[in-house]
Every structure is written in structure tokens, then in C-alpha cells.
Amino acid sequence: MDRKPKKWTRRDWLLRGCYAATGGVFAYGSLFERLHLRVERVACPLSKRHAHLDGLRIGFLADFHYDDFGNETMMRRAVRTVNEEAVDLVILGGDYVITDPDHLEPLAEILQDLRSRLGVFGIFGNHEYHYDSRLALKILGDTGVRFLVNAVEEFENFSLVGQDSAWEGTPNLAVNLRRAEKDKPIVLGWHEPDTFDFYKDPAVVLQLSGHSHGGQVCAPFYGPLLLPHLAKKYPTGLYRDGERHLYVSRGLGTLNIPVRLLCPPEVTIVKFSAA
Image (cartoon, rainbow, N blue to C red; front, side):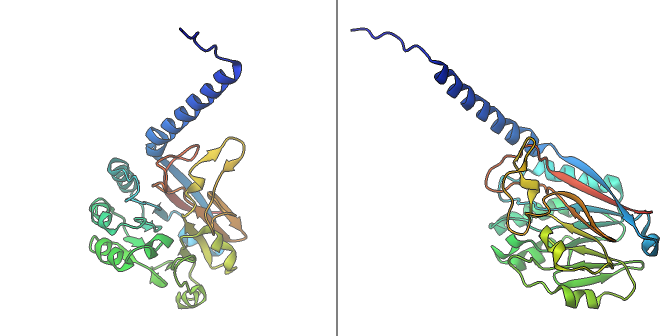
């Protein structure tokens, strides 16, 4: 006995429409936005006592996660973008791979092309403690990246302080701030952005952080849907507290799923500007 074809109800059409829309959004986030690199140009104002940093430019790259859907073409584009900007300093914000150190060497081959007047410096993210972090020090260090993990690098007009991960490592900010030369402004690299509330020292004119991915997937009119520990208060962008500033990058890579939505990957170019 022949069966009559099922007549679709309004509910059937709605369900299929939702499935199609979800698939379309996933495809857009995976095939387009995840790879659509954006350059964020950030003007960081200075107080009068730090006006001598006027014009200093920093390139910031974070959250590479190169073993989890890493894209060589986009990473090379990020390096090329930083070089074209002719920045004074490059800072790498951690999370080079998630768990697989075998991907450090191909990432290092890309990052070795980074150029800046004062050098390329790296800090640790929390994922450096999910594998043997000494490999990051060795493999990336051989390309010229100088790691600052609870360490200070002095320049003529400012100090650069690199903190260990607040989530997985053993940071010691008070000691590091005392190590910095007195009366110099400080640029601080600290992977997790909510650490901005851990101190109040006005000598820190700028903290650079990643970790949040900007939420990676954001909802219209709502914002980030899921943020990690120590990235819930400051998810993305520039924040200010008196003379102190925090900039949080959306990063380059993705975590768990190869999708970004309303949250494209970024190269950050910070320029200090005297008020």
C-alpha cells in the first residue's frame, strides 16, 4: 500500500530553517571570520610625566593556539602586518600551542620573521603549563624571541615587565615592579586580563593581555557568550583606571571549535600619545 508523502507543518519548516541558519552561521564563522584578520589601532593616552613615550608603537600578538586549527596563511599575514607597521617593540602574549609542542617548530618558523627596533619579547600563557614549557623557551627563543617570565627588560625610556601566568604559573608582580628602574613608566605583559585589578601602581602605564579570545563567539546585542577564568571582567578592548591602561586582544587562534563569530582575530598596534 502506497503511503502519502508527509505534509510539512509550520513547525517542520521552522526546525529546518533553524538547522540551516545554524549551519550557515557555523560555516561563516569557520570559513570566513576565523581567518579574517583585523588590525586594531589603539591610541593609549599618557599623563604629562610620561609624555616622553609619545609616539612609541608596540605590536601585540596573542593566543596563537597553533596546534588547534592553526592557519599558516593567517599567521604569516599577521607577522607581515606587524613588520609593515615598523613598530618599536613586539610583544607575544602567550598560549603558543594548547598541548602539542610538536607544533612549536612550525610556529617558530613563522614568528622568526618578526622585526622591530627594540626586539621581540614573549610571555607565558596558561597553556604553556599544559606541556613542557621549556620547549617554548628553547624553540621560540632560538628564533630571537626573548622571554620575560617574572622578569624585567630595561630600555632608555621605559621598563618592560613580563609576568608569569596568573592561572597556572607563579607570578610575582610586587618583586618585579621593585626590580624595574625607579621613576620609569612600565609596560606590563600579563596573559590574563582580570589581573588588572591585582595592583594599583600608576607607574604601569599599559598592561597588555590576551586569554579571553574576546569571547570567540559573541551574540548580537549581548556580547561574549563564554569567557575563561580571569577574563570575565575585561573581555576585549581598552580600559582605563586613572593613569593605568589595559588592552585586551581577541587573539589570533581559536580554542575547541574552529569558529569565531562577531569576534575576528586581531593584530594589535598600540601607539602612545601625550595628552
